[in-house]
Image 1 (cartoon, rainbow, N blue to C red):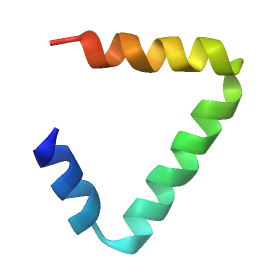
Image 2 (tube, rainbow, N blue to C red; image 1 turned 90 degrees about the vertical axis):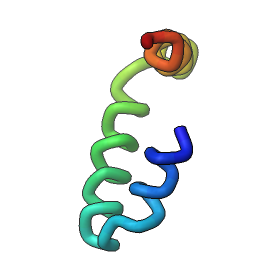
Image 3 (cartoon, rainbow, N blue to C red; image 1 turned 135 degrees about the vertical axis):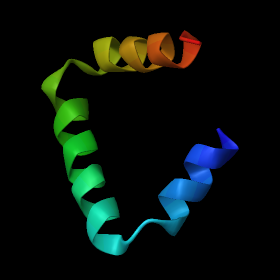
Length: 46
């Protein structure tokens, strides 16, 4: 998790903006409860 946070903070602004745009699109594609459940399931993966 620390590595992912570091990479997110250190990446160039243009890449960060593009990733944020894709995340926002993914987050609004599903109903909120389903999106949240999918995020929790992804966190549980090894």
